[in-house]
Length: 197
Length: 293
Image (cartoon, rainbow over all chains, first blue to last red; front, side, top):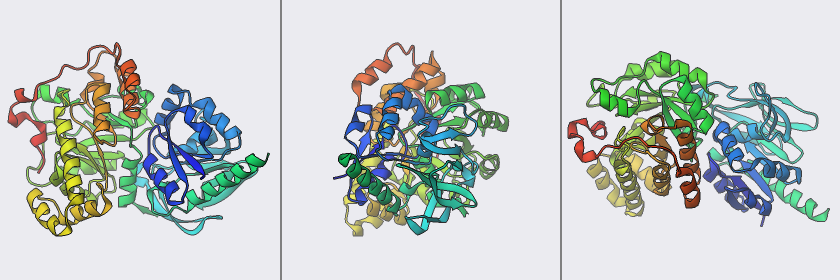
């Protein structure tokens, strides 16, 4: 069975576990770096990116997470997780993991009272997707080879760069588990091709 | 695009799960909290233990303090309004505060009615001691709950009581027959529809944090063990000897609440925690948890 981890330092961990299981894959809550070895893919959940970063540093997750991505195993970041994955973050000198060829801006839709729900079209996933944006970031620039999967109000809110998937919104907060299904598909393909190489 | 929906308001609280929300009274404390890994800060004029010591009427913080904190950090900023004080709540909402606490820590403005929180775009957190209070606040539109505990005491006993009670009552409700729910609603003064929703989903529809008396990393971990989704720490951090170290230790103990060796390590040489108060020594009229209806 495909094993998908959810980085369990803080945030909406339980909800991602549910959407993985709804798609028939096995979910693992990752609290320590050693747990990464057994996984076929990893989700970086929504939460507070500054909090997660502090805990990533404190428990020595930084290099193991980068090595995980560089091994070719898929990673999916939602909201705070997208900020962690991004190659550049507007206003910050250094990115966090810096794995995905995109630039993101934090809290770019405003404060909580501007948080919203909107209908989206997501390429290869859904034409009718209800997305929940909470103090959301957006992708201000997508690098060469990065495919834009969804836009909202002219801003990029979902993209894929090789085996990295990211979105500004929170797929885990609704009962629509199609994006998790898409990501599990990426993990299955990567598992098959890594086994053959 | 729809703003202020239940999903957006409750979702904001979901993102705080497993985290620590810290009381701060200025920009400097807010930065220490953010640096330590707080998921949000509560901007106040005084922490609860000082409110208790000062006596008199406790009101919404000076908007200047709230603004200063909002400008100092990128994590969400919460603020407290008095129970039933429509205008304090609207003022804080207009300022762009991310979450409001309709709080018994402040002196109530209304001794009969709470705010109709579903009317606001900004989400609310409210305190509760039992399923009746929890369900009434949800019925009014609260998007997040917390135990009341007994704020500003550094004594965990009331928060433990409230967390255990709510969770035990939720478990009882889930297992009871549907035809018994109306009487349960009557006993607790709880809206029937909210109880039916809790029964159907098998859990509260909003997150429930621990608050009111958390003074050490072990206290925070205890509340997580008892089923809290996260913790609020009020007076505990900035009344301790080394707030930065203390704040980091509370954050780590909340994340790894079942890792007892780690909690032992981070509890070493934290300095003197805040001096606690025995609940029995507080006159009934001075107990903040009695506020709210």
